[in-house]
Amino acid sequence: MRQGPCDENRLAHRRTAADRRRGQRPRLAHRRHEPYILKHYSDPARAANEAAALALLTHHRVPSPRLLHADIEMQPARTAQSVVQAEPVPADRFLDELAGPLAAVHAIPGTHFGRLAGATRHHTWRDYLHDRLNLYTATAPDLVTVAAALRQDLDRVNLDIEHRLLHHDLQLGHLVRVPEGPRVLLDWELAAFGDPTSDLARLAVRLRLLSPQRALTHGPAPADQ
Image (cartoon, rainbow, N blue to C red; front, side):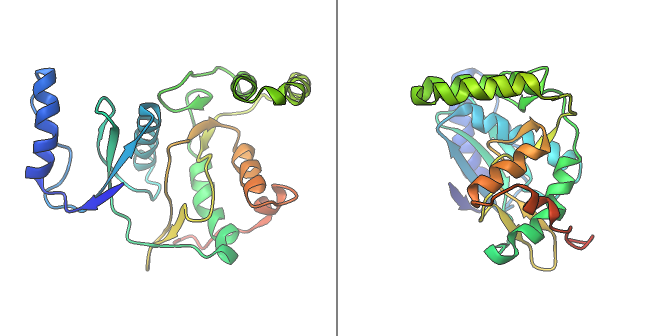
């Protein structure tokens, strides 16, 4: 990841070489001299997914980095995002200050289940979860027995839910506090449409909470934050 002034000459030089190879004219989506973060991705699908998430957040006016430019076909794939001048929320305040921003994210409706871009779109949450179990067992065969039990549970429970935007990578450092401004969630590579409880469960595992209910019971931040 690289940060610097968004000098159009430098950016045009990077874009022109690639566009010449494609027979295209350079395309710039940056504002002159606006600071930016240039983020590189080893997986182009993650770049496409984060670009789609940032665009959706901006459309719904949820505080987030603005997507200035995305080039998924470059090697490596990259996005240019506006700089967020902020400090990480302290660990002892994380759950309290996460509640407000996360509620705004979970209020955004989806169009399918699964990643926003660069991956299979599923018609149901159950299909998405089965697909994830297939991926996990393919990469870790020792999970086959556990996955088989989970598949049986999935087929028994009611998963008729409405798809909502999920961050799906909640952790310390991904929530920042803008001075005299809002709380902002960063790093949207793993964003998906699905059940908001999935965000809370993944967070509970990461923070070693006994239950995602602890995240649910924390009150929202003040309305202006």
